[in-house]
Every structure is written in C-alpha cells, then in structure tokens.
Length: 263
Image (tube, rainbow, N blue to C red; front, side, top):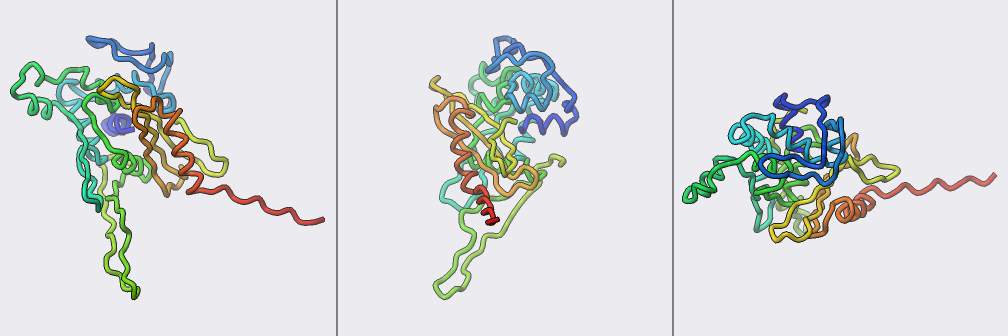
C-alpha cells in the first residue's frame, strides 16, 4: 500500500503502468515473487495478487536506488506512522523500524562493508521485507489512513474515565496528522464491502513467514480498520484472513431476515 501511494504521489507510478512478472527479478541475486503472474500486471492486479515484482520495479523508479529513492520511500512510510511510536495510552509502545541509507550507514559505521545501501535493500524495503519492522497497531493505523483519505489518527485504549457519581474524570482528545499523500483481495460478506490486503513477513530464523492481513470496512465509508498478524503461520490469505473475518462478522452482523407476513 505504502509503496503504491509513494509512487503515485511522486508521479513515478501510474494506474496505467504494467509489468511482466516472470516469478521474480534478478538484481545481483534473484528476488522472488510468490508466483509467476505473467504479462500486463498493472497496479490493481499487483494489489489484488500481491505481485512483488511490480513493487520491486516501482521502487527502482523513485530515484537513485542507493540514495534518493529509498530515502523518499522511507519518508512516506514514516508519514504513515511506521518507524515511530504511535502515542497510544499504554505503558509500552514500539516504534519499529523504517530503514534508509542514512540509517544503514549510521548503525554500521564501524563496519564499512555493511554500511553501504544496495539496490537489493530497496527491493526488500518496497515489499516490507529486509530490515523493515512494523507492529499490527501501526499497520491498522496506516490502513485507516488509506481508508479515510490520508489522515493518521493517534490511537487510544481509553475513551473516557467516569467516576461513580457520573463525573467525567478524563476524556481522550482526538489527535491526527496528514500522511502527506493526496487523497484486492478480499473477504466476502454479502452485506458489507471490504477492502483488504494480505501479506507475509519473513522470519529471520528461516521458518514459516508471519501471516498478515489488513483491511477496512465498509469500503465506501469506512468505520473500522483491522490488522491481523499470526506468527509463523504462512500465507495471510490462509491464516490471518479467517481471524479478520470473525472480527468483521462481529462488527457488522448480518441483518436478520424480515419475517414473511401471513397471507
């Protein structure tokens, strides 16, 4: 989502752009896609079918893949709330990580052999792999920003605190910021339109990837954004989607059938 938004905002990507996916892309080494998607894969296809190659190529069009390109992509990702704390009213709040060439040079300043940012780092970053770290809460907020046209809201666990006598002791104040971007594969609920995206994140221990699914609903006028992450569960469509579906079914219960009138 974020790589697509960054490319569209910059103008280096358009909805008419299409690529050929032969199952991966060679750039020094082989960067794979989970499937050979074939010719004429456009932006909509890439989102619906999770085509990695589309985003590999999109990221290389954003500028110097060892400098300005990944730096721009990282800036957009941080605008969506990644790589920084959310500000939620809980004792802990993880910032995650959005890497860029400056970060890599800093953390490896004593290791010149690791300090350089390679084109392959940009490819990994474009699909949320490599050094990218994000929490489910961050992804839910970013998905909400996509849904509402570009507003990132500060999350709150507590809406308000009320004393026994009814006096309101504390109320959460809504705070938001613009992500800096101008304003599918899905779950089928017959009465609600849902916009969602699957994903998988590699595990450093080389076991099954973490399964992801993010979505918002109703698609036309969203009121809820959801992020599901199941550790080492494989593909999001097989494992994370059923969890989100249960949440959505609870949030949007099917209307009860109208009793038929007696003749």
